[in-house]
Image 1 (cartoon, rainbow, N blue to C red):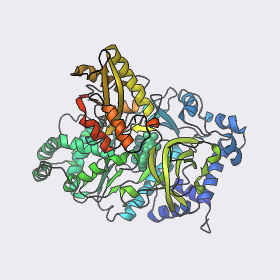
Image 2: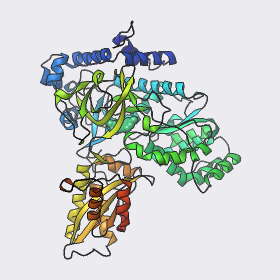
Image 3: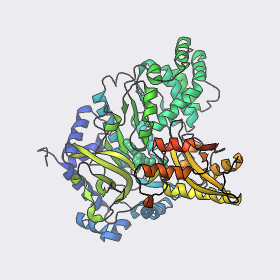
Image 4: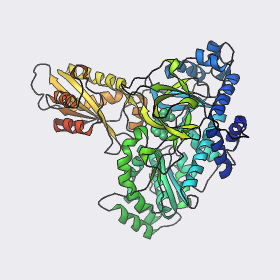
Length: 601
Ligand code: AMP
């Protein structure tokens, strides 16, 4: 393995943690070169440090008896999922000391959107690790500045939203990764003038007020905006959708210089005053003219003509939004820079202006100790035998893997649940394409509904139907993202208990009630995105008799084996969707947003 002669893993890792407040271009890029060149050494050092520091924690002691040997760690410490670690995180959340899991104090919990038994996952975090994640995002900015000229000569219109924190019984804060990161950015760079929106607008917890004011500030400063985006593609499209609903009001505010009265958040009002100091008739007319066009194709480029790219994650489950983003963007590059999660930061896209289909993330070997379980793609099964796990330095190009991470935040050999494909190397650091989540069937935003959860929810509605004399013959689904926000569509075929003939005209209230039951039975993340209007009302399309026979014939004609045929619970084929749609006799939508139960955070 190539190695820079003067490299010392420790010094670069240390430097990585300490450049947070004084990040300069050359240092940042030099560190990136170092850690990606010396992958094996960095990984060795990262694991060594984690084990030495945490050997005496209750969790590791259980398997290692106080030892910190790497080989022993691999033999004895099990590869786990959230269910295996949640008893420990729950104990800490309920007041027991952090050293059940780690030597350092836990500073806060991060709420992962992945769910477990209807609850969002609580991932421990420490001040030091948040600093490292912050530095990673700074490096990302450096990479971008290197690739897009003039980025520092204008304003960044990034749509960020914070969610309310809550306190665990032990007094620790539980917050989302994004909220936590925004707090750090605002702490390190208070009132940073690079962003179009002042800090208080981003801090506003009412997402409607915040979105409105972020758009207003962005429109007023349109001539200066050099980049725009949001964390995920779906979020950016929700903002565009909101703009469609509110552009007249926004123009009226710009024309009169008076902010709408429904914006009551004092931080938002004061901040807008700083940006909108006087009426601007000319700007209001111009925006009105652009927005009144019959088609909104290319609207982003028309409203913000200096924008160089849209920054948003468009890989994995977000890839479905690329066509819609392309429609609105007017040919701007879609830049997907980071790959990370609440539990761990994985990597950076070092070739940010590439086509979305070519996006790979270079794994940063200093962020955690990474292992990879090979995934056999021929039947989608994951080989979980520990003997198959390989180190980061030993992955093979072209192979699919599930990532397992060991962090310095008390997570040991944790299956993140993402499947990635290794596409190459940057220096010696593997680059991966995010293929998707293990077993996720439907997703329109940060929600991740598994087949199992979907089936469980449909069963609840089935019980209701049966009481009314109907049987559900079969069902399937797809995530409809052609509308904004996207929504879940379920195809149903029904039969009356008394008769095998077509069900005829259905009572719409009955099926709408089923939509509601399903939504109520889905997990907390789904309900949260529904509540925030990042997912639209769930829809049931009822097909005529024989719909699912026709679907089966379709798949069999395409090569499926009849003896192995199972109705897919989630459909991706456009042709299959067309076929199903051609048989639809009624469409029904959920009439209300689902309730979050008290124990669903
Ligand atoms: P969370 O646990 O809520 O922090 O969400 C983390 C998950 O979001 C990851 O495990 C991935 O499934 C997904 N994710 C994050 N970044 C990306 C990316 N760049 N491309 C695709 N999926 C991503």
